[in-house]
Image (tube, rainbow, N blue to C red; front, side, top):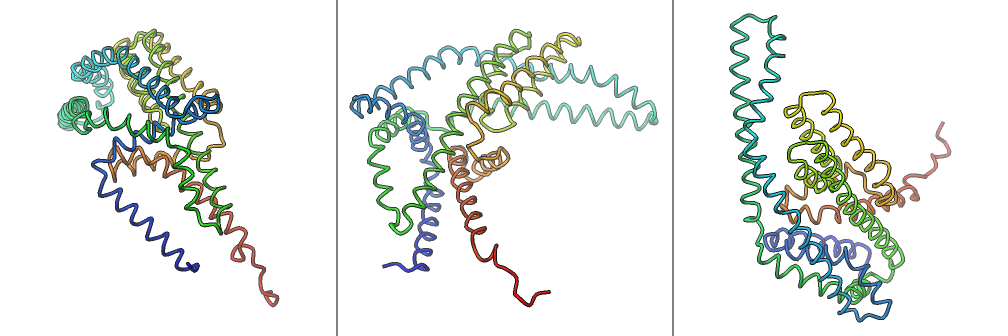
Length: 358
């Protein structure tokens, strides 16, 4: 029924319509996307229970209930500690800025002795003004994120719609995958199935593996920094672990914030060295133990590509865009590798030169 050109137009129009629908519906997509993400994350456990003879609806209910219980317990244990530490940190930001200035200004004064007195005074005034403005902006930004962050998300919708979506997705997962399988063009069935399997392996390997890496790093940083005496060590560790889902961001956050607080609080090489040791342990564990074992090289998603996808998704669609960024990155990565394989097998790449070419 469809020729090659009409098939291309059909799929191009379909992708455009899907993208337009996502763009128009982005204000209401968040609970549905989170529900589907939870279902995708937990579905292997439901499959295991089903293979052992448990009814699929019951397995989905048990797994979802267990997941909700674990999340609730974690929130009850961690939320009060984080709330107190983050609130104290926000209040302490101006004091820490002032302490940093007191440490740095004497060094600058020694360096500025080569300038004239008038130039030194101008530089000092400008530096003091910019530092005060930066402190105020940073404090306001952190306060706005914490106080109004949940205003951006309909908490009631998340609490009600997300579990419902996750339950029905896990219960009906075989039917959903079977319906998608029936939509695959029969002519290209084997190729599409192979690419979908590669997408699933890449996506599941990254999401599930990186989630475990985040939990492990959050525990390492929280416990280690608290033992090292870093103020607000638990809050820094949990935040760094959460941000570790984005390559490099969690590690950079842990190093920068921890060293600044340690420098201001301690000022001695020995105590700062203890903080550096904790950070090095976390970095070594992430780079040489956790990521290779839990994520592995088979994922095929370069950290820079993931970072770009997350930033682009957040810029285009907000938090909903962040959720779909990694799946889209996995799809585009697999399709790009497929296109490159097709190109290398084509006459364009391997066409011999004309016989009369010198």
